[in-house]
Length: 345
Ligand code: DOR
Ligand code: ZN
Image 1 (cartoon, protein in one colour):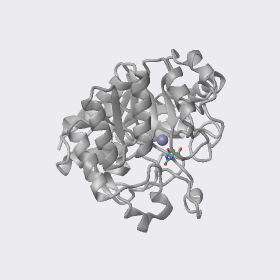
Image 2 (cartoon, rainbow, N blue to C red):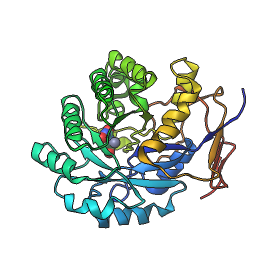
Image 3 (cartoon, rainbow, N blue to C red):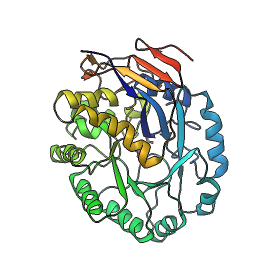
């Protein structure tokens, strides 16, 4: 048992809810959840109630995010009717990619029309990746459009065995595609809905044991490049409704779940840094954060218990034994977390 130093981890897929849904989370509380969980850089998604699909909305977010305790970047959004905005924002240092929704989820950015999709892939003439939420057959379509226009494609939150296979084949053919997986899909199957009800509902939904096994294989054969949390906080009230909101918080538990994966012999310790730092940094060209690191003991167990830093105040992993809670977080030489406690605001 000993403390080890790791780079500040990077989460390229979070929903921090500001502006428009700050009863769930905001940039300050979301950043507290991030640093408590060992992340020093995260990239926020555009599906706010008023989506981030214009330069003005993007600038507003950049401004609002200044209260955060860690660094935050943004993915721009599209509904297919804002392609004229792309060239205004794609060189912005705050933008890391374009997010495209091919399936229904929280927000109003679903694009189902093939002509609109074609227009989006054609118009995004940037080396920054197009990130897709595309499940099953939708993924096949997204891969085909990316190939047609030779765009870099990042497939978000792969959750089904068939999707792992689609990405594996695309990679084998030389297509520039990368893929991410969420901690909840690595540790829960649809069975969890019996006990957790709405708290186990998210998009893409939890899969079967076969899906889960395929995700671990995908991590180990290089089909899956990164772990992204899809941190998607909703209030308890919203999760206990008859039609629960989709999504679960994940920033505070992702690192502990991956070190549990190491403990359980599913991955090697070196892979944690690859999945949460080197690969996300490379794929999204995340800038260096000088003198930034975290310290934790990967063998030290802890149980997921409240209180949480995320404003939503719950975790689908409550009660689970995880490993390696961050004890120190330093960003650009400044101590942000000391002895496991946030020491700045
Ligand atoms: O479960 C999800 N929640 N999936 C998404 O794609 C969006 C997210 C959210 O914003 O709540
Ligand atoms: Zn998401």
